[in-house]
Figure 1 (spheres, rainbow, N blue to C red):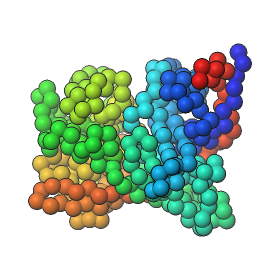
Figure 2 (figure 1 turned 180 degrees about the vertical axis):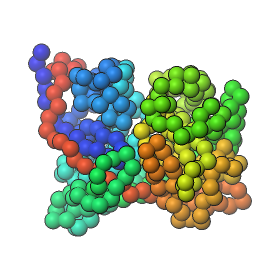
Figure 3 (figure 1 turned 90 degrees about the vertical axis):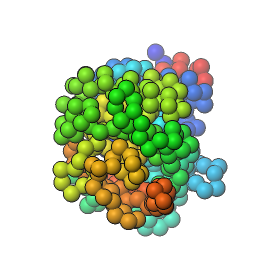
Figure 4 (figure 1 turned 180 degrees about the horizontal axis):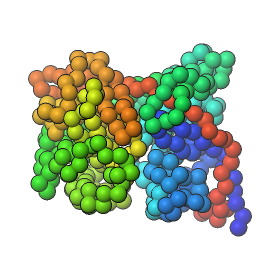
Length: 363
């Protein structure tokens, strides 16, 4: 079987990792692109044994980058979530963790020039239209990956990358509360259907019989939990105007509980057919907005959030994550303006990944 080489960079971004490509190096046709990405990651096998994937949804992600024609951005970031057990690619969501690696990858690929000790990279998330500014350390004209910032879920420390998210409200549906309700009932469970950075169905953990003290591994083995969540998620997708979401990873699911420590909220984030090992960057923004909306499902269990700019802290399976939010409450209506995080990334490898020539021959 003849194979064709495609240049790529392989980075950890936050608590995810994936392949970063130049969009121009991949097929333009969406169906052919999906076949290529399925082969790249080895989707359709629980171990992804025939590709770069790591047997988990946080390790089967792809970023495709190109110079942006939008005057407000330097780089277009097109995200693809490749499935683990199925030969399936979802282009509907974006990923905040993989986004963390976009600034470094764009500089490494020559899409963005270094501008000093720190380089600002303006990013347009193609999947959602959101604008994000990344601040990357570039001393001596090169990306710095060494530093003293630690994030729960990743061993060691690395250089900080600051992200400021703009225009995240209604990323997938056009509205923060796409049904017009702050909470509603789906098959006997009260939920908040909300869209900030990521469309989500958020519910109280106790209503699904868990405490949010469970580990990722424990939750992933709870078949009854997923059997209870999935039909409600499908109905949530329909109500949010997303159509049939049976093959889509959106809306995601967030289950919340009162914090144990000094955080504002405890959360378990589902992707949606497995528990996230930590908490997604996009999901943390959506959960923060939910905690701020008067009357939402988080009311009464989330610790009060300080006036803006405020740090909202979440407990997740292996630690905590902080999001800085700028917001305003006016007569009980939330104006969610922006969210910022400081995370880390690392370039793990770069080179060429090989795919069957027959796949590209169809492009």
